[in-house]
Amino acid sequence: MKKIVILISGRGSNMEAIVRAQIPGASIAAVISNKPAASGLAFARESGLVAEAIDHTAFATREAFDAALSAAIDRHAPDLVVLAGFMRVLGDDFVRRYEGRLINIHPSLLPSFPGLHTHRKAIESGAKLHGATVHFVTPTLDCGPIVAQAAVAVRPDDTEASLAARVLEQEHVIYPQAVRWFVEDRLVVEGNRVTVRDAALPDGGWIVPLAGA
Ligand code: GAR
Image (cartoon, rainbow, N blue to C red; front, side):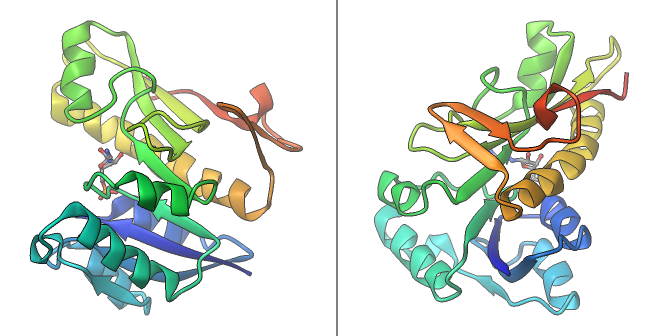
């Protein structure tokens, strides 16, 4: 059984999608938020999961918060740490500690639009395709090896909100899928490239076909 700790900061819909997927061979050891008021914690508790908050505002430095967070994570001895809308930048030491077992979902087709406000940036750029990316986390923000991506069309009448909603729908597809692949030991990382061993899907299994056009 692979143990998973999920980190959230807010609504936690990606966490919820992963929990609801009931991935065989995986157990959710804990859900941890850096914000005590994160609404996702309520879903986690209602689902009978261990749900904790470590308020980042209670710490004087990033290093102190990272140390408290990793102590809380390590109590569960996880095989995988999943960032699901976790909106704190983590320090290099933290990232290195979990390298190879720390994944994130980012709401753009990386390497386009790292950072914040991705949907606005996609619309303003005139891009016709936008989407979401699951990637291993490395010290450089939003830059690690890409595990899975899903694309959606950018419609002429899209607003940030309408585009975000269609991307989020795809996030809920690719994130549980990527976690499943990790749990099944099927992800092979070579440099910046990830392949999925014995992928049943076309394209090596790591691109979800254009959706929501
Ligand atoms: C998701 O869209 C996720 O991709 C994004 O925050 C949202 C969280 O939603 N993450 C980032 O922007 C990370 N830089 P959720 O709390 O409902 O899963």
